[in-house]
Amino acid sequence: MAVGDLKKIALDETVVKVNGERYWLVAAVDPDTNSIFHFRLDPSRNTALTKMFL
Image 1 (spheres, rainbow, N blue to C red):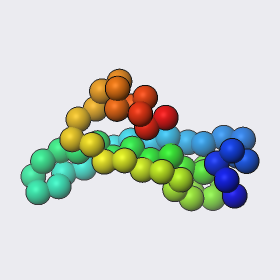
Image 2: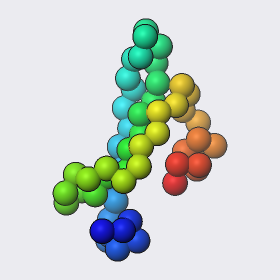
Image 3: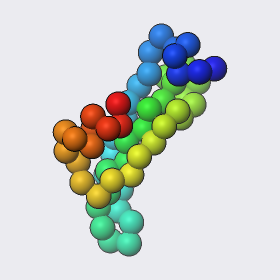
Image 4: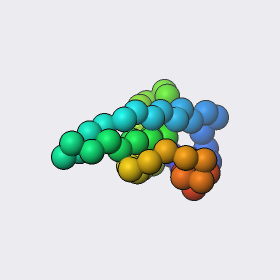
């Protein structure tokens, strides 16, 4: 199923530590099947990065 075929996509974000450093993990998920369509791991969280993800 292509992303364009979906009626809804859930976005989720959380902070994870990698080698003692904080990173933001953002994922786009099909809420019906929990299939991950896209994810991104960034060292910071800001509007520009969020717009690139969308």
